[in-house]
Image (cartoon, rainbow over all chains, first blue to last red; front, side, top):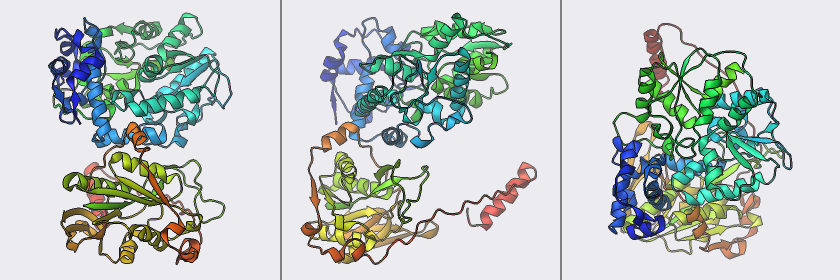
Length: 375
Length: 262
């Protein structure tokens, strides 16, 4: 199934492109793969016909949106990648791990192949209010599939609940009714599955009464804030909420973390949604923390390669992984802790600590895991 | 190459806690997620690959209630041409032989070169339907097929035996092949694809349409009945192998070899 360049140009406003190359220049994976956003647009502008199945480089994209961020003409080059991905999705010839993640999301409401009835097992002995239909809460905590099922990320959800208890806010979770936001399915190009998830989630949210929602993951936050339509509640990433709690003195500190801490801006929190200050505010409020700023920080943060469906795809490249570069930079700065605020970043960076042999030198922690130690 | 693929809708129970229904002869279905039987999915993919390479048609046949339409639509979305669902209250309680009888009565009127189906169903693990179907249709069959090369009127198939051995057979077509998992990598059926496939008609046939009598189907026609379903007794056993890593590794590899696990 071919995709016509001319159709892409029309649908994605590619005629605005001046071929300056800032997109490819800024693309984090372009240094370790053959992904070239500028060339994709060039081919479209020349009216070429794409055969997406042959364009294996489109699966390297992490949808970090650096290309869109840097484009001086407001073109969104990664949308070309998404269109080509959609075409491959419709043909059904996707890699088995991607197929399994998509099918699992459809059948079980999470991409990890786990059953819905075990979605709340992360709670263990913690007392967490699970909303029933018609119930009301001030703050709905949207846990995220990865936090619900991945043993490492379950620690984040547990820490989050403990910290939220300390703020005194009235909060609750959806329990087993919670289903994948499907952001990654959208980024993989499965538009139909994303639409279906969006419809189901909106119907689900309508069954409860909550003015605000807070997410563990920047990906869920991004989906609800930017991709879902007709959202009736106020949506926040947890760093926004907890930063405000610290400002309002609802969270106080009774301990210290005497460590050098640096922060990796997740692409979906930082680049895509401009949330840079709140995570830093939280870290810099923790007593004892000596906060170090990475050179590639904020909009220049180096993508960890966890987004854009990459959690289910291995890159074809044998070059050094971006997460490994990131970890090495943090170690070279003398940081004891590499903090982040995204489950995918945490998993990829932690893996990189192991593969670069830096387990004795640095730890990767989510901001909430640091907070829970001292509130 | 006109291919018929027999598929079954089964519950996904790899991680679910399966509960026995109060009747004692079936499981509680509430809360379970259903999908195409895994081996049937490989059979479907194999049929689609053959169709792509050699042309022809793929017809899906299933015996099941309305919910089985979901399974058929998924198959149509992947590229099957037509689908037939066999359903009748009289079919309830059918064992494998009866299921084969019902499928055979639907299939015998069709033109086909090949029938593919999964080698085993992940709910009852019986492996009965494939061979029984072939016998009832009076055609040869091969089970646990891991490779099939098809020519006009004949096929060379590889069957999986114990210990990694493969048996290679030359067969005349038409034939029934029951497909082993792993023969290929099944494709994905997108949500939009499945929605589009909903427009294709699914033919529905009951007892009367198939020319069968009530005493030939359901519990009445079955030679086997389920008397009781029980969960296995859960036991725990863990052998801790002491010693330094090299010692323990040697002991462990001895145990694995002894038990024929490597």
